[in-house]
Length: 396
Ligand code: AMP
Ligand code: MG
Image (tube, rainbow, N blue to C red; front, side, top):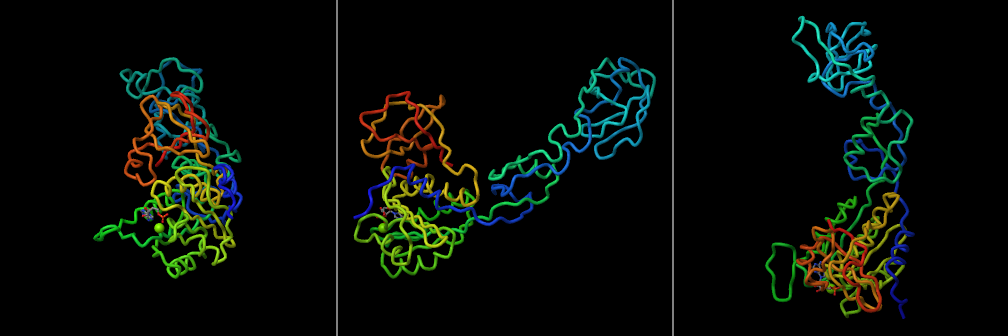
């Protein structure tokens, strides 16, 4: 007898409990897009590093304006004016150029008069600090910049580099094998004989996992024989994560559970109260995590988004690895199922309301491809009326 299927949230908790963050490594910040920061970073230098101008114009002393000033020189970006500005002087200045000592405001070029005495500029009244960016006004040296467990994006890279971090410590990428099973599977581009289909789960999973930060080291296919399964799984079990598709249900050719057990994979759970994706298998051998995803393409996709992507985030030290559901209203009434949550494929209209796609079977991957995301319809009696807020997960 197998244990009864788990609730989705219980199953996810079991997955996350099994995930220990991987080792950290140092990488050039410029190459750290999508990586998870291993330790909190503080600014190494003040940002901006020097007080500078927000505009092209003239640096002046606000208290001396309005007035006409001698243009004493220029402070350009990267070429500061070398001496303090004297009274009665103005300095031509460009955006990002250092504010000369003695100046405390910048008047934009559009607001000055240059048609008086040659070499002079007439300036209207300007406020102290006008168009001045102070040293440290973005962040000061020693202040927090990025917290540990953040997934770095382009703006983080810019902030880290600006604040003096040419390299950062990130968690290493999980090494993942994708293993498809089934005698019916053929590689894309080959001729299909009767009863055969293209292996679409392999490439789909590899794409999702790569986006989630994994290093997908191998995608291989196993025929529906114990020998082929044994060989494929044995060769995969030295990776951080093994992800198989198909062969995990109760049919006579579903071999993944049995071969996994034979190879020492400890089963943590099998089956979740959800549709699609009920037969999901999760186990571990030593530090290797094993996900046996169901073969139907939509089931594979949903299980991967709900359980595998969070596991990869947790392995990379994410501070919030759970899927990022948000609340959105249903556009129409949706029937509930008494004993399992449904993850239905939905389109999101211009108002943000969710309309179920017109095909909800677990083989309908092309309809899924036209959907915007998944809506979670919790188990229960009757229906959810239009306007009910449900949890919504966009699909990439
Ligand atoms: P299974 O769980 O092995 O019984 O497979 C369930 C369904 O998913 C069957 O219709 C399979 O043909 C299909 N399927 C299994 N593996 C793949 C795959 N890699 N790509 C596309 N469809 C698959
Ligand atoms: Mg199969």
